[in-house]
Amino acid sequence: MKRIKKAIIPAAGLGTRFLPATKTVPKEMLTIVDAPIILYVVEEAIKAGIEDIVLVAGRGKHAIEDFFDTSYELEDRLAKDGKSHLLEKLTRIRDMANIISIRQKQALGLGHAILTAQPIVGQEPFAVLLGDEITMETKGSENVTSLLCRSFDDTGVSAVSIMKVEDSEVSKYGIADVSEIKPGFFRVNDLVEKPKVSEAPSRWALPGRYAFDSHIMTLLKDAKPSLNGEIQLTDSMRLLCREKGLNAMTFSSKRFDAGDKLGYLQANVELGLQNPELGESLKQYLLQLCSELGKG
Ligand code: UTP
Image (cartoon, rainbow, N blue to C red; front, top):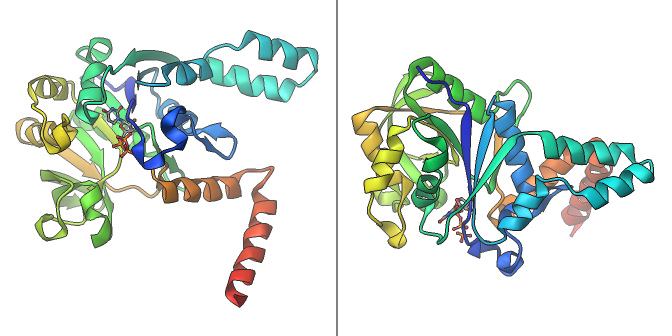
């Protein structure tokens, strides 16, 4: 059985929720503390044992590609100035993974973005990490992509992450109808993309982490545009579910939708608190702010 060694990171969406910032900067390049969102996503993939990362880029492709490339002038200056800790940070990013970039010429939906990477992944199984979602490991938690890849490697069955959402959030996600096999591990019976609360089969939503059998590519090839005229990944996942099965797993890492303004701010605060240089000062500032807000 083939193990997962490749990951696709779709990063070609228009990022309309983040306009005007995303008019010229791809949202995946917006900064969380001191690094672009995409770096956190790539680091999660590498930690999960991924060797090749296929970046599906659109506008601003060069900004993302350049970020993972050598910057001779900058590296030379840092070396001459003796700023070895900064130089190390840059060279680590440059050398961290084999990143292959491919362009989605039109933002025709997440399913289409994944299909764009098919010539690179071929017949291999692969992970998908949405380029605007960040997960943060908490004490004792396993990285979400590791969890999914391990499940695929053990069973040969595709796997998705799931999380419980409030009623008000249901219409923002793909929602799964699931049967629990053991605590935290489910079989997916069906999926609905962005349903109304009254039509949702559950409150189990799919955030942006998946581990797929290569058969999903065959299904995506035949997929027709549906909701919003886009090729929806959920449509092909429904078929995958019937033809090859699909598992779902809960996770204990924290997850942030950094493509959403509130999620982005939350990610900055929580990852800022974990930062060794800033954490304590930020905590003091937040405590002070909370006490002021409490008085107000
Ligand atoms: P989103 O639906 O969150 O991205 O897709 P979007 O369309 O850019 O967002 P808004 O709603 O306009 O703000 C989730 C991920 O899939 C990628 C996005 O870049 C994001 O990382 N995506 C989406 C593509 O790569 N191509 C697409 O056609 C659509």
